[in-house]
Length: 180
Image 1 (cartoon, one colour):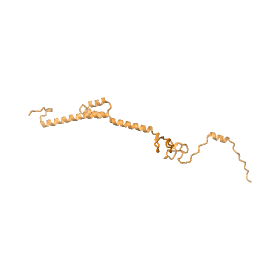
Image 2 (tube, rainbow, N blue to C red; image 1 turned 30 degrees about the horizontal axis):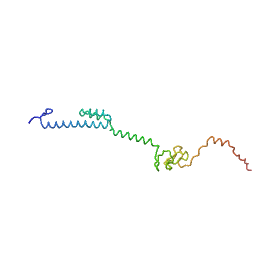
Image 3 (cartoon, rainbow, N blue to C red; image 1 turned 180 degrees about the horizontal axis):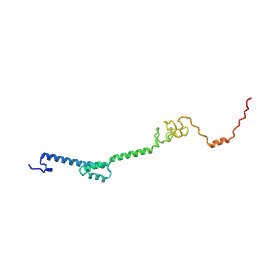
Image 4 (cartoon, one colour; image 1 turned 120 degrees about the vertical axis):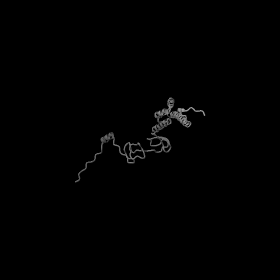
């Protein structure tokens, strides 16, 4: 039998086989880490140059992959795009918050509409005092503080009307005589 070149000077065939299998296993793990680093960097980093640098760093056995795991971005690109879409959708919902749909005909109406311009149905009742639209759940008008459903308050007379009323001649009452 011809002796096989032993790695590390090991001459025992069984021990030499174990060492060779261990080295093969380490090389396979190292190459799989290089591939994993490259594929993970592609999912997390947009710049192809940085993806290449991450893969090149992982060519240093095990240390490059560990360093990449420390400095890699925390999110996948898909998650970043999804979050940006959710934020854009939320901003669009906020921008269209003033425009609602009529519950009867789905025509676009604003919050301040008392009636639907399309089907003419009443959407909100006006305040008896100030005329602003009231939500049916409200107990008082938030604009003038009048109670909902209460009789309207009289407005104070204007100064000009009060002056005109003071200038107008009033009928004099006849003097009453004391009773004897």
